[in-house]
Length: 60
Length: 339
Image 1: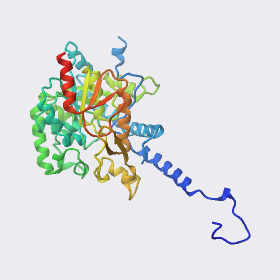
Image 2 (image 1 turned 45 degrees about the vertical axis):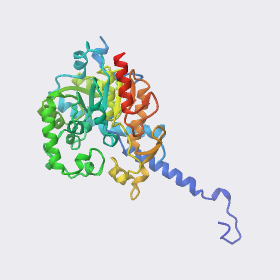
Image 3 (image 1 turned 90 degrees about the vertical axis):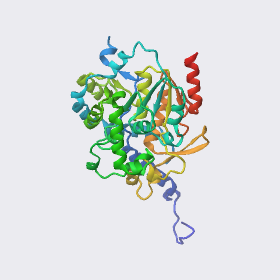
Image 4 (image 1 turned 180 degrees about the vertical axis):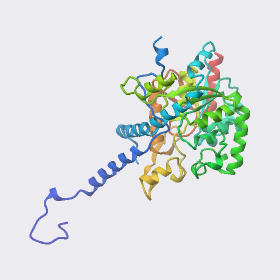
């Protein structure tokens, strides 16, 4: 910026916009929101190594 | 899009629960009048039989590209064939009658196509099947192919056991019954059954049907069924790509409509590239399918069976999965049986 602006003031580093970082953060936020809308065919969950839960049979 | 991290995978998991749980519960209530036998009964029916190897026939693009059915027909395979709903038509058209067909997706209009849809002309307009490489036979002359499938499923139905999730629509249930299939029911495991407000526990207490881990999709469910209920010690997978071949256009992917909405003008931004070192090829997938592959790898490390991925394509490798050519795997399994 200072290359193009002439004057009696100086820009401080803390005011300098890091466009790349902002763009990356926006992209990540957008991707996260997008993933919340996608979904698989059916829910998935698994406890330890159990593939089948059959309460009545398990209690015998 | 880059490979997804843990948090992103959890987002898809949560989104899937939100998308499928309520509708699954509603369908379970509607299906309750049809429930006679469950996978618990099937387990008891086969308890005295020695476990056999199983081939799970999923419906990914490699099923057609690699002509897996032809290879299976030529082999002297004496085990069980478990087909997912999406591969049923391809199996029957090519001379394989599966022992079991698994179905789980609660979608109201699309899934019935895999069984032959008696109400095809009444469905909402949908280019889902024509856009994709799901089953090339569906791309031409839809109406005639559909009728052909209705006839084949009706003819072979009595030989096929339907492994039906309570989450499917009653239309699927009725279609399978009309085709003469014997049905064995299961509930998807939706959530932690030990939690206070567990949907799975509520569902179980409603219908007393065992809850099975799904892996998020019908192919993974079929694999779980194979080692958990059929007690298979060797499970071979075909058509389990969880991805699309190199060069696939985003328009030809399953979630194209959603990707268009999420990335307007650039839906390809939602696709993920995965290099398969066994194939030395880079395949393309979308976030949901990538999630399936990661779940499967995690499950393979907890399962008691030996899993051979004989798809010869796709992105499912690693974990406790042996990525191997189908002919070679069939030979290995046959050798094991004989010894």
